[in-house]
Image (cartoon, rainbow, N blue to C red; front, side):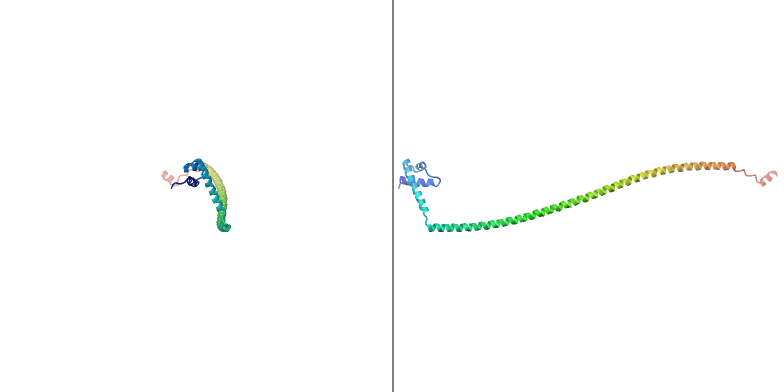
Length: 201
């Protein structure tokens, strides 16, 4: 059985309202009716929808009260769960913050300890370097004195050798002079008596 004009307009309006608000032009095109029919029946469809909405609004007070109590209970339960989750999350966050602060404090303590150890090591090395520099300077000074003493001893030895050579030369010259003098002052030995008698015979 063919639908009436009103039924076609109502069906088109329902279909269009599922996606957007129906207008006279969209209903007229979808239902294939005249502009006047679309205007008339779309107005009726709209009035019926508004009336149906008014009927929904006129919900019994007892039902509304039960719905309000149910909504309140749901809200209270949701608030309790939210508070519990918030408290749990806050406790976790507080523990994580505490652990992080402890870790940071340990890192700071380790850093302070490392800095103190580094400063102590630097101080010790500086003292050792200073002591080694003093020892090196003293050793260099001793070496210089030893070298100076060696040069002085070498000079003294050379001078002594020169003096010894001169003394030896003088001693040789004196010995020669002494020998010559002895030859000059020593008388010749007289001839032996036996030799003279034998020669006279």
